[in-house]
Length: 287
Image (tube, rainbow, N blue to C red; front, side, top):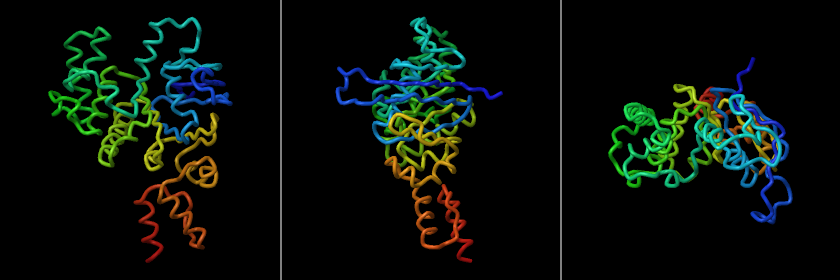
C-alpha cells in the first residue's frame, strides 16, 4: 500500500471578488493528487496557473473554497480544526518563500534558526542540538555567529531552510525559492534541497519556473489554468514538448536541442534531460 503524506481531493479555490475582481475562473479547479512520503515532486506552471496558491492551501495560509486536503491522514479542511491543529500542520509542512529576507527574524544566524523551536517550548539543550544539526545540514555552521543580512542570497535562503529543519518538518515546500538568486546561490539551494530529500527523508515540493531544476525531481506535476495538465517522471513530462509550449512553458535547453536535431533528421532520442547525457550521445554519434 502506497504511503501518502499529502492527499488532495477535488480541491477548488477562488479569491473573493474584493481581493481580485478580475478573476473569472477558480484559481484551482477540482484538482486531485497524492504525494508520496519521502518523494521529491516539482510543480510547474506559468504565472497565475495556481501553483503558489496550492502551496498556501497545503500550509493553511489559505482555506479552500471546496474540496479536501489530508496531511498525514488528518483532514486539515475539517471545519472542526482548532488553532492548535492548524499550528501542528504548519509544523509538519514548512514553507520557504521566494525572498529569504521575509523569513529572517533575528540579527544572528543561530538565533534565527532557534526562533521556531523556542516558540514550540523546546528545552534549551534540545534547541542547541537542533540548531547545530540544522546549520550543519545546510552547510552554514561557520556562519552561526554572523548577521543574516550580511550573507549572500543563497546563504540567506539556506539559513531560512535551516530554521525549518530545526522544526523537524515532514515536508518542505519551496515556493519559487531560487527565483531571486544568482546561479551560484541557486546551485547551493538546489544541493540543499536534494540532500534534505535523499539523506533526511523529508518530502519535498519544489515550485519553480526553472526547467533544469525540475529534472532533479522524482515526479513533475504541471498545473495549467487551475488544473492538473501533466503528471509523470521528468522524462515523461518533458517529452511532451508541444503540450508544454501550449501551456506557455519551456523544456530544458538540452531537451529542446535534441528535439530540433530530430526534426532535422538525426536519429536521436527525444527524452534527453541532462547536458552530460546529451554530450555522451553526441560524442557516440560522431564516432
